View (cartoon, protein in one colour):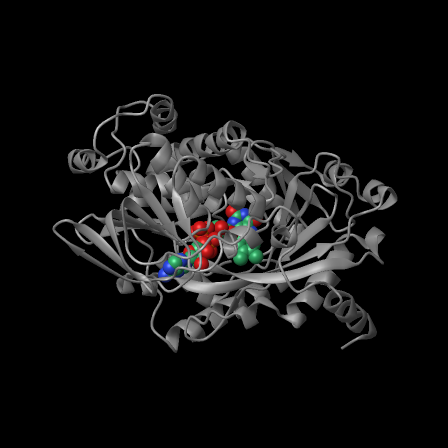
Amino acid sequence: MTAREEQYSRLVMAAEPRPFWLDQPGAPPARPPLQGEAAADLVVIGGGFTGLWTALLAKESDPERSVVLVEGNRVGWAASGRSGGFCEASLTHGTANGRERFPAEFATLQRLGAENLDAIRATVERHGLDCGFERTGSIGVATEEYQVDGLRAAAETDGLAFLDTDAVRAEVNSPTYLAGLWDKQGTALVQPARLAWGLAAACERLGVRIFEGTPAAGLASDADGATVRTRAGVLRAGRVALGTSAFPALLRRLRPYIVPVYDYVLMTEPLSAAQRAAIGWRNRQGIGDSANQFHYYRLTGDDRILWGGYDAIYHFGRGISAAYDQRPATFASLAAHFFTTFPQLEGIGFSHRWGGAIDTCSRFCAFFGTAHRGRVAYALGYTGLGVGASRFGARVMLDLLGNERPRGGSSDARAQEDTERPRGGSSDARAQEDTEPSELTTLRLVRTKPVPFPPEPLAYLGIQATRWSLARADRHDGRRNLWLRALDVAGLGFDS
Ligand SMILES: Cc1cc2nc3c(=O)[nH]c(=O)nc-3n(C[C@H](O)[C@H](O)[C@H](O)COP(=O)(O)OP(=O)(O)OC[C@H]3O[C@@H](n4cnc5c(N)ncnc54)[C@H](O)[C@@H]3O)c2cc1C
C-alpha cells in the first residue's frame, strides 16, 4: 500500500460501518412479528420499495381489499434503505439498454417510466412523505476522451443537453470532467430510508397490516388461494406478491435468474460553505461517470456527498451475508477516486461506509411473472436501478394478479382515477373477473425473461471473467475483449 492509500484506508475506517440513511432520526419503532395465523386478500412478501409500493397501490385502488405485508427483517433495511436514492424514470436501466433489448416498445417504456416518476412525486405529495424528493435531473460525465463521443451521440438520440468541458465544469467543478450529458427530467433524488418509512406509514394509514421480523419460509396453493408459511404459522392469501429482491427466491425456479452482487458506498461529513463553493453543484444533479466500473454520487439535504459504485462483488454460491456489507479495500479505492474527482475537498472526512446486495439479472432490468396458477406474482432483477422502477414493478404484479381493471388510456392515469373513485364489491370476486391483459402485462418487457445464470462454479467463473474484462476495457479506452463481445452477442451481461 502506498502512503496515500494508507491515509485513505485510515480515513474510511474511521467512518460508521452502517448505512447513513438508516442511521438518521425518524426511524419508526420495530413492528411486531406475525403471531399465529392470519388471512388476507393480498399478502405481500418483502418490505423494500417493491413490496411497499405493491401494498400501497393495492390499497389505494381498492380500500376494501385486506392487505398484509410480511418483512423478514425491518422495512427498508436492505437495498431500498441503503441505496444511493437516485429515483430514475428509466424502467430499462438506461436508454441504451432499453433501446437495444426492447426496440419495438422502447417509446412506450419511456412514456411509462416518465409517468411512473411523475406518479411517485404525486404520491410523495399526496401522502406528505418527508423523503427530501428533489427533481434535480442527472449528469452523466465523461472522464476519458473515448467516452466523449458516446455522450455526444446519446445527447442527439435522446434529445438531452450535451455539456462540453467548460459547461460541465461550470455545473460541477471537477478537473476530471471532459464532457457531460444533462438529463433534466429523468431523475429525482430521495432520502431512500425515509421514503421506505413514509410508504410503510402511508400503507398502515390505509389499513395495511405490516409484520416485521417475519421471514416467509414457503409457498403453496390450493383451489381457494395460496398459503405462506412463516415461523409463526400459516398465512392464508387470495393472492401473493413477491418483492424479495436479491434474497433466495421463494419460487426455487427463479433462483438461476438472479445473482446477489454487492455494491459499496461512502458518505462524507457535511461540506462547509467554502467546500461547497469550491465544487459548485448549484443545481444538485445526481452524477454518474461513464466507465464500466462507474461511480454515482449526489448531495444530501445537509450537503454531504454520497459516493458509491465502482466495485461489484459477487460471492461464490450466491452468497449473502452481513459480513459482506463491509469491504475495506473497496472503501479505500472509493476514497482515492473521490479525492481524484474533487481534490478541492482533500481533508474532508467520511461519516458512514456500507454495502448492500443488488438483485442482478442478465438483462439489467426487472422481470416479472406468475406462479401457482396466477395466484402468486413476482418482480425481481432491477440490477441496481429499482428505486423508481419498483413502483412500476408493483403495478405489473397487481395487473398480473388481476387486481386492476384495464379501462384504456394511460395506465398511470387509470391508477390515479382508481384512487379517487374506489370501486366497491368483494375483491375476491373482482380478482376472478379481472384476468384480461392490461397495457403492462402485454409488454415484451413483462412477458420475457432474462437468460438465467449457469450453476456454480460456472456462474462464479463467468462473473469473475466479466469483471476482469470490464475493468480491462476501462483501462483500454473502452475496448471490449472477446469475452465481452461474446456476451454482447448472446445478450448477456453483468452489472451492478
Ligand atoms: C448500495 C446500493 C445502492 C443503490 N443505489 C441505487 C440508486 O441510487 N438508484 C436505484 O434506482 N437503485 C439503487 N439500488 C438498487 C435499489 O436499491 C433496488 O433496486 C431497490 O431498492 C429494490 O427494492 P426491493 O424492494 O425489490 O428490494 P429490497 O429493498 O432489497 O427489499 C427486499 C426485502 O424483502 C425481504 N425479504 C426477502 N426474502 C424474504 C422472505 N422470504 N420473507 C420476508 N421478507 C423477505 C428482505 O428482508 C428485504 O427487506 C442500490 C442498491 C444498493 C445495494
